[in-house]
Image (cartoon, rainbow, N blue to C red; front, top):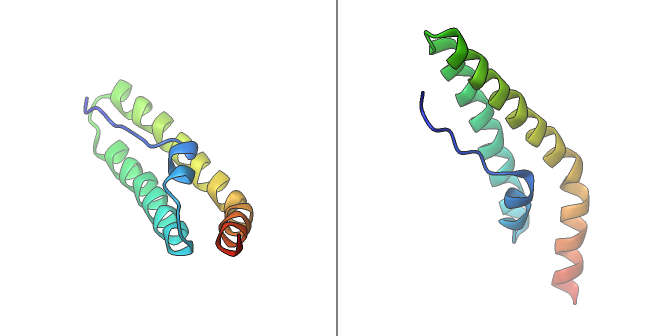
Length: 83
């Protein structure tokens, strides 16, 4: 089985420095969840498929959390820009 490394929500948030970075991180997080979904479909061994599905669910959870945190992140970036 491949070694899948997934950035955590905190790592994604820490990499956001501008408003454009928010869109970039949203796109990257969504694409990674899609990638894991495709990898799970291609897996031939059930244990591998289940392990990848678990990672994929975690990736989708991170996408949802990032979506919910967007407004707070935008506010903090705007506040930092005015300070």
